[in-house]
Length: 248
Image (spheres, rainbow, N blue to C red):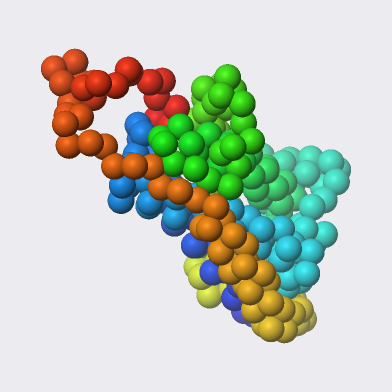
């Protein structure tokens, strides 16, 4: 058994930056954020959008174990891994295991739904984003409610993912968290994983920079709350009707 290269550098960076972006967007989403808080929420949300695009592209053109084809397996493999896990002997995997691979896809799908609904209802605070003009006014509240529910769902899925990582690390006596930092795992393997030229990642980043410019150009931050609009005894802004809390 020796340490071999499994996760390429772009995959590892994406993993940790995506985690930070999700947390930033989640913890700045309370109420109807404005000003600096809203700007941080937009930064977090837009970062998730760009990282999702990168991950989808990298899942086709990235390093060997970052590609979807390397870790999306059929029902038989999923069932076999579940049985081994139930027997507390999951076995070592070079990349994602059969269950973990589909968990990754489920989280990516949930994040895609979160950013889509978030961009659609972004105008509720008075700002405007790339998709905020598409949604009819009557659908803002229900779509916002879905956005809120999905925000909770991704935290639950992330918790299950972390629990699975910790369980497999314990059962296999292997530090999978460290592996996602260093990119290397101690496995029985003859070679390092095939890595693509980093210029390919640079080209994808240029595409994302172009997309980011478009998104920023189409975004208008909400106006600041007037100084006279202070919180009254009932916790409402004076002169405003209480709105449904769509974000938390």
